[in-house]
Every structure is written in structure tokens, then in C-alpha cells.
Image (cartoon, rainbow, N blue to C red; front, side, top):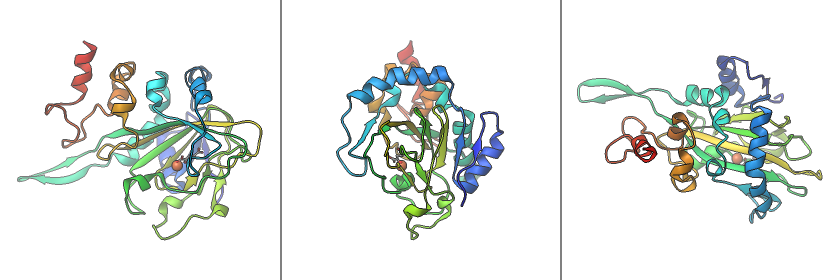
Length: 279
Ligand SMILES: O=C(O)CCC(=O)C(=O)O
Ligand SMILES: [Fe+2]
């Protein structure tokens, strides 16, 4: 299959969703503006410099990973609520579920939530990460309904030589028996500020960096609201940091109730806890 399609920020959501459903991934050019990118480097750059390389082969012994991203920066609203990312995540995952409650036939629509966040910096000498599906975390079968939509925002240019994310287009349609082969994966090439959006069922992995310049990406995963978050956002992001964000993002960070009733606090919408805290 050919490489992933590229869209512009003004491409319609219908088209982006169609591409995602067919190919499993899409590159959005200029997803974040230069001011946001500069701010993200100010907030996350020092933490990346301070971090040691990961200790294991999967995470990469020449790769630095920084998590708890929403605690480290308050500048992610335009990124996480970008219509091609959050809009597509909502469109693809928020499908009504029919059910009976007594004699009434009703439908419940799940929420979506921020699941895992990481800045990932791949340095010279890092080899390819094993190809994997991130929705394997959900211990689910494939093919099937999407339970994750993920973004990799390029904080530096991504190239074939510096570790641009390897993706097998269309592999979300595969069953659980077919293994991913390195020859099938294509590198994501995009400029800083652009973003790769892909579905949780797509085989992918970090690429090898053979250049002298590190490759830096910021990933945010949005999952269905009835699943456990990959990264424990309640521990990762203190309430004061959550409160720096607008209501939509606060809810995405976990202060929301997934219908018909997951995640309540004192039998109420957990968002009320934040409202009380904010005074
Ligand atoms: O760094 C990348 O390009 C991808 C990393 C990844 O897929 C992962 O760590 O799950
Ligand atoms: Fe991954």
C-alpha cells in the first residue's frame, strides 16, 4: 500500500474520518501553530534533557520518554481539541449502544478520555521499536470497533532516517493471527508542528535514528471512556494543573462520567469536584 495520505487543517472532518477508517492513519500538516510549538518546547524541552534513556528494549535504550504531560504544560488545548484529532476520535468511537432498562429501550453513548501521554525523543543509535498495536492494552480482539485514536505531534521534523514513526497502513483491518512484518511498515515523514493521527488497531512503532539529530514527538492517546486509562491521569496531573485547562479538557482528563454511570464520585458527576475546588 502507498504511504499515508496528507491533509491540511481546513480539510473537512468527513474526509479525515473516511481516510482514518480506510487507511488507519493520516498526516495532518501544520496541526499546531508555531507559538504553541515554541511553548511546548519551553515546557517540555528541559524535562527531556533531564531524563535518562529508557531502560528496556521496547521503550528504547537510546530513547528519552517524559510522561505526565498535562501536568508539565498548560498549552495543549488547541492540540488535544484539534477537530481532526478530537473530532475524529469522537466520530469514530462515540457510537450509541442500545440497551433495555426495564421496559424502556434506550441508547447510551460513551465518552472519550485522554489515556496516555508522552514526549518521545529518539536519539542516534536507537534501533526500530517492535511493531505493535497500542490498543493491545485493551486486551481486545481484531478487527473490531476502534477503542483508541492517537496523535503523534512532531516537535521536530520526522524523517525516514531519524526515526519517523513506522506505520503499516490498513493493518487495523487485520485479524490477531497475521503478524506485522518490518517490510510492510512505512516511515512517517512530516515537519515539526504536523501530526500523525492513527487508530489503536494499526501496527506501528518508533523508527531507527541513524542521524546526529534527535527526533522528538509528543503523543496523546484518546480512548473510549469505559476503559481504564493507560496512564493514571488522576495521579499524573494534580487538580491544580487540571484546573489550568478549560472544561472540555478537564473532562477529557477523567473528570467526566461515562454513561450510563462509570466514574462517579459521591454518586455525582466527578466534574463537580473540580468546580468546588475552583471555588
Ligand atoms: O516514537 C514513536 O514514533 C512511536 C512510539 C510508540 O509507538 C510507542 O511507544 O508505543
Ligand atoms: Fe505505540
